[in-house]
Image 1 (cartoon, one colour):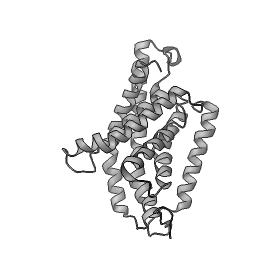
Image 2 (tube, helix red, strand yellow):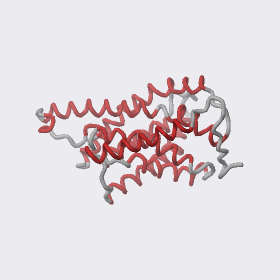
Image 3 (cartoon, helix red, strand yellow):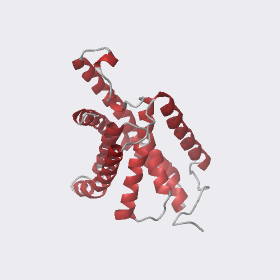
Length: 245
């Protein structure tokens, strides 16, 4: 017995306990809210913010399922290379750099997932995929926004704030963009193998996770995701500067 194709299995051998998953999401969301409210990053979206989020979520879907998928046909089939996923990562990072408010990551991934269901997957298994996408990939971006006090990837700092001449401040913010991008990129290597294969997949489809495969995929995803995270952070910095954000 299930709902919308969801088995609701919580006792598969090796499956992450649901209490751990729910507890993690609850704590992470609380951190986003309270730290963002106290130190910055938790603000209302403007109309322009929503435009960026809508376009970013739509383009991320088009890239991953159509453009990236087409390009991937000409590349070796390997977990070490994922053109579609990397494109989504960079697009979401750019949107985060343009908006820089807590919630941008989760809302962008919600739109991405909704459009992916509408045009590619269908809505079977929902709302679990909405929860998965928003509270992993999206939440990681929002956590970085609140820890950066609304200045993710070094965007928003002025030479006066870093107490350095303009040229030096740009160099330092580039380093910050690369560092934060690499950290979030590393975090993006975790959801698919750890959260999906370790919990959401077994919960929806009732199968026992393969932890050897999960560990291998984490190790395989990390190098490329970190590199693309660095590139995405730097691109977000320069694009935000170019549009005057």
